Image (cartoon, rainbow, N blue to C red; front, side, top):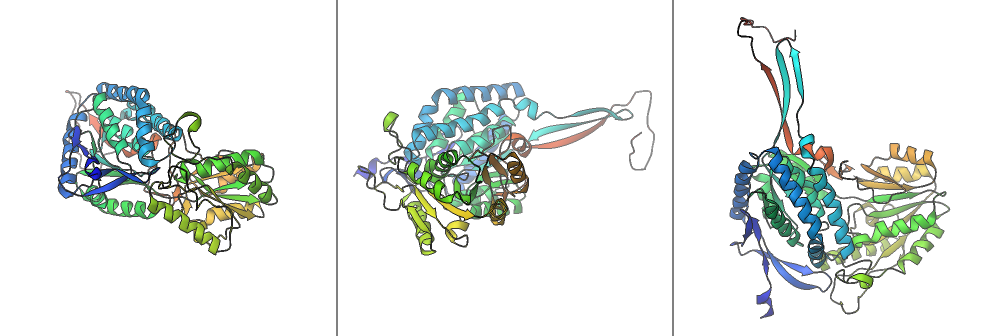
Length: 506
């Protein structure tokens, strides 16, 4: 009987929560307890079509609004988000599991993009060249694409939508957001906030669903672009399918981020930052540090310092507040927990030493939660799948290298190129590192080099498919298309006459 009381999380279509008639649902867990807290609707093709049609109507209204009116909505949304962000943080923690302070940090980084988007009039204005040729002026216009699709991952249910939607909306587009079915409620909360800020119905739509909804967006002739963050295999599928259908695509994939530690580095700083970057959000970050490349002879001392810090970490229910708030919450699902454990099994079978083992962690009072303790591995062979593949959990590996050059070669030999970092007090080595590594985002004594909103986020190689990175100037370029206008207004007393030659500048 208790299951009858479990709510079903709906879509958001035409400016209101919309129940699904499909009958298809998926469970939404509280990861800290392992209990199904809700189910989420999974759209069928008819619901997908209805959501896209609603967005098209919303676009037709929203794109006709003046820049001044659109900017007012962006400012109103920013103020509402800033005032009510604790509500959103609680929703994120309940469904994702990350601790409340980390959920709040996610929102604040997303809010940076909202604040960038409020200044959109400057970033979407065209250019004007008077008298480019005799009596002819040339100017450019930047106009919205139309309906754009955003497909967001489970690990940042608020921040990733906020990377894309505010810029797309500011530029005059309508957004259809397909959130992860693992933590879908943050998307609905954002939809309600957009409505409260004054956005017209349909201009921000939430389509709950699985692959059927994704494919509906990819194949719809009405959807002009797709923005995606997730694993590399899915990013490649998104890119290939959407591009084949003539859409613009920015598809951000997976990562295997390395931290190169030179012998002159401050090892206490390195240990602190390796723990922060490796275990924050239980390692469920595409910018997490997964591998520490320790240039000998520092590995033994560094491992001891990291081990000491791990012993002080607390793991528990992320919803606890104040002094009771743990350092790390659970993983998103039991299936994902088993996958992470499988990679540790692989590392052990391949001859690595498990210095700190989080596979058997049980949190008292939350025995059914999806917890996995911080794990530290030494001597991981670079041929192991635990080294080459993205684990996406609280697993940090130390690989010993003999030189700066060997470390850079290992970084560059990987298939990913999302983020990397170097820790050193040698400015020359840092400058050489930033020039030689084949990675899109680089930290110098900074472990998670996520750019601020007015720069753009994105990696190289199999970490990014498509030409445009997220937010920053790339974002505004992606969500607008340019028209070039060549105009001549003739003097009534003068006519150019007939000339069949190709137009020339004079």
